[in-house]
Image (cartoon, rainbow, N blue to C red):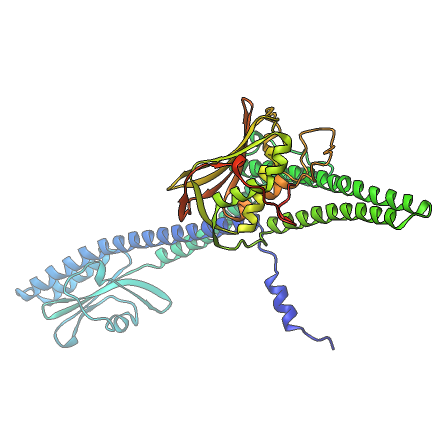
Length: 499
């Protein structure tokens, strides 16, 4: 006997596919149409029935008035023969109208009602005025009547009119309305289904076009002008998504090629040096030199791998900066001292201008970002020029650290990509010892981890890189830091070496 897995059943129930849009629209249109026809049919039937009731009331009122006059004349002294004659004349003048006259104590003065009608009528209370609210429907001996029981002084009048013809007509009308309603509902559902299917044709065409997209065909685009206006936004979003995917795919391809390129050089160096070392016997000093050379390559690869891991963590928001007060002016001053020897060798001056803010952040990460910007600026500054660090701010909005250096302008098409990993403005793809090309990407990741942003501009012989933070300064230090006046002070090992 097969077993039943209730957990699997519940999981299957939860994973059940939602109803299609065509089914939903068709169902709602069918339900709305059916309800509309139901209400319309009910209103029509009520209206016709009220019309028939009004006609019946119009026929019963003259009879009631004639009977009142006859009873009044009898009370004034008219004979019973004249009263019976007038009753007979009244019944003869109105087809399908029946009445019964009862005197004091229930004595029957005249009775022209079908058998059993009087007993059925006496079940309802007598009224003094004949109007629409006084009418009742009675059924006896297989026939239906509409009538009322009137109290006229000490007499009682039972008035009735046969309504079988009306009821037969209403029954036929009700059947016709039901059949018409069912036919109209079915027709409206069919039309709604066809309309929805035709309306979804552009979506199916878009889906077919989307299926053409692949890693080899990321150039597929949809034309927003050839779809209904309701789908224009969807098409525009799809095209924008493809643009982003294409850019990401290109970056990924370039990233893989750049990693291979950057790792190939040190690996090749290690292999070549090892082969040379093994080609013949050497002294201990020679082996020591080869090991030192290999160590440099290992350190280079280790630094690059560490930078790549840092960027990967930053992209997945796994970096949590420490929140401590950091004096950016003091950090820049220490970096000036660290880079002083290198800057002097290149004939480059260092200075900082503006009020340096104290911000809440991770000191090591901020120091690393500033170090990367400074080393990049010194490397691209000609001898005799000066690298300037500027502190600017809007106390109610933002604060900014800008590293500016004179030099050749960077072409405008390269500016948006300078913070990408391994990006090279030089198409030759050679760095000549300038690092792995991850320094500016790390700067961007550090800035974004602190809720800030980065930017670059290059015009009129000046290039400016800046980091902009939200305004959260807790204090300011003033003055100008002169790089030439800094004392030489170098650390034995510095984790913030230029990228």
